[in-house]
Length: 437
Image 1 (tube, rainbow, N blue to C red):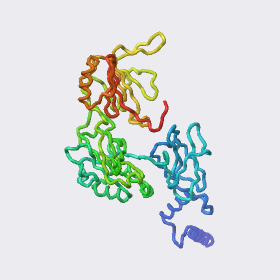
Image 2 (cartoon, rainbow, N blue to C red):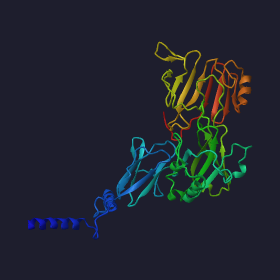
Image 3 (cartoon, rainbow, N blue to C red):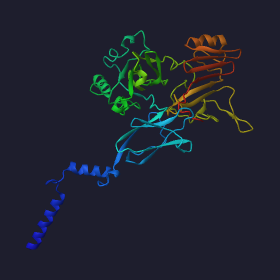
Image 4 (cartoon, one colour):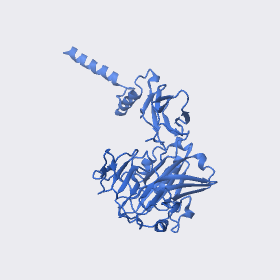
């Protein structure tokens, strides 16, 4: 019996000595730390086995294959990028540019750029022509933010008689951005999004101190009479010491919610672009969307149709890069060769990605009309050329082409061609990645 008791206490003593750390049992934090260390450093005797975090920021959307979150020091990492026919693509690793060269491998047409993982946590950007790009974001702001107009860089231009100028702010450092959030965010701190639109905090979460070493973040505030409207970055204009961001409305809903809304648009630009600019401004492109025409059409140009069920619409076959649909009630016939023949009178809607072919949103980007019963802005196929010119110029269009058979009118990115047999309405779609259909 005494032997058994002695063995029992010996076992307890050995267990305690093995479990002790500096004379104490390991805490839960110690156990957690050991678990994390073992995940990142499986073999403490071999530092080369340590894995380091790779943060990938793909502003351009060029990354074809996703990368792992952790790599060992010295490990070869392959980055597969989109192919562009014009601009050169590349990567920037910890501030160092790595582009295509004679030794660059390819996966089909896609270039593969290889780098060696450093022995530290690293940040990788995709680049176009060596630039990480005009990264823009659209986020929820809220309506009626106190003093946001008074403290803007272009405050002197913001008044009721000039609705096109928008408040703009400039952040040179991460602390500048955080101070703005603190000053104007209130208790919510810009933590909340709206429908598919993220919060400002989510939209700017990747902007760190390393980013601000080379880039400046511009922020524009835009309000709308309805939360149904959406906006986005269109372009940058620089004229001497004048810097201006152009904002556009990106949708044109036929039905809108009855609420006021405010939104933020941020644009990341290289420091060198704004360092000599003393006048900073932002303007809403008044031609970015057309007024609803009071037409007897199912859809209007640039209208978002992501939620539209087109199953009852007949498809017009043959289009690449989008889909064409006959309007409700218009049914094509088929000739002896099996080819579709349009009805004598019809409306055909073109649906593509918008505002760029790389975007996921689907919009009406073309309307083709041969039905004399259809009217928009008071214009129909029975209208005279004089009537067309008079009515369309009242909508802010400019006649850009005129001959004995047709007239073409343009307003910003929109164009309308009018003949006695048909009318074609279209909006330009960008193709910044050179997508080939």
